[in-house]
Amino acid sequence: MEFSRRLNRFGEEIFAALNVKKLALEAEGRHIWNMSIGTPDFEPPMHIRRALFDSAQDPASWKYSLRDLPELTQAVASYYLRRYGVTISPDAIMSCYGTQEGCGHLAMALCDEGDTVLLPDPCYPVFKAGVLLSGAEPAWYPLRAEHDFLPCLSDIPEETARKARFMIVSLPANPVGSVAGPDTYRELVEFAKAYDVLIVHDNAYSDIIYTEEPGGSFLATPGAMDVGVEFFSLSKSFNVTGARISFLLGRKDVVDAVRLLRSQIDFGMFLPIQHAAIAALTGPLESVEKQRGLYRERRDALCGGAREIGWNIPDAKGSMFVWAPIPAHYTRSMDFCMDLLERAGVLCTPGSSFGPHGEGYVRFALVLPPEQIRQALSAVEKSGILKP
Ligand SMILES: Cc1ncc(COP(=O)(O)O)c(C=O)c1O
Image (cartoon, rainbow, N blue to C red; front, side, top):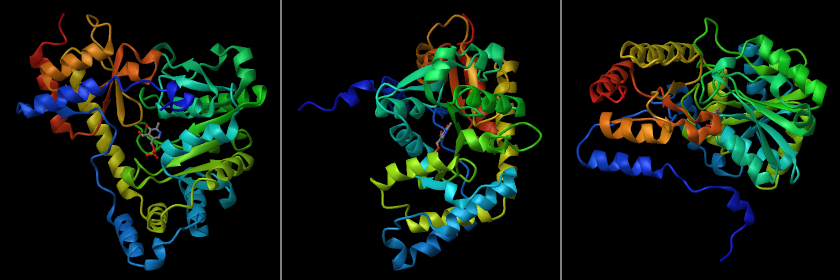
């Protein structure tokens, strides 16, 4: 059978080879330090689990929910005011099944075939997948070390900026670990106004940031609400990745358009999950701030520890990822990942899987406690892989 031409836009999973190798090594009894996937090993707070459990006891919770509960969108609005100082109307907020799903469908609501969307390179892969699904074309803006892995707006050709329907920005950034100050966000608002481009900010990591103060929201920037929307995921702050809870909020006409698209294919988020989300958003946040400190200890163990053994990995500034240059005697990140797994038992992700500018780097997810990170680094040192 012939399948849709749309599917031809997606390549084979070329990194399956790494997983095959991992399984083979484990079958031989080797210990693998797995820092490839960004699934937190921390637990969701008990009050969130209890809210889901309590709601699930009620048979009425098992019906189609059909909409976001007013208490849910109000909880998001109150959270945005409490946590980020942003005032937003509950009707400019909608839920999605994780930012992954929201991003996957966004371009279908905003673009037609052949439209242009500005995307960071390297980036979180669904940014590209969503654009391809809609039939639009990605136009890449590079995130480079010499520009602190931040968008360099003056490098974007004027013609591309004018053509673009929207631009995705995500800071703190996966995979590169960069963080924006207020200037970056102000420049983005000016850029959006000058070229009539919508800014879509993916705010997955405002609670995993190594600055003194906790992270913020793009929507707190003056003028941002007129030119932007933000994805706000609970996945990483509250360790609820499997529950698929995220929101799109900001410019109301954009939120309305995405809501119209999703209402064609969805009957609403499972009510116990909506209740769990309300508990997360209205409950205590001490554990979130404590966790930020724990991620910092892991970041220090990995980046500081690597530098001690002669691997010059700069400190990540935010996100749960560390972006590490591969040793100079390697040219391909995939080759280095394979050798690192084979020789040291350490699994990370090749930078090339995040876009062409990711080549020459690998990404580590901070999903192991500091002690295990130190053991992994000791295995790296013993393996001799860092030396030509
Ligand atoms: C930049 C970024 N956005 C969004 C997500 C996923 O969010 P969700 O679990 O809400 O789909 C991730 C997860 O790794 C991410 O790195």
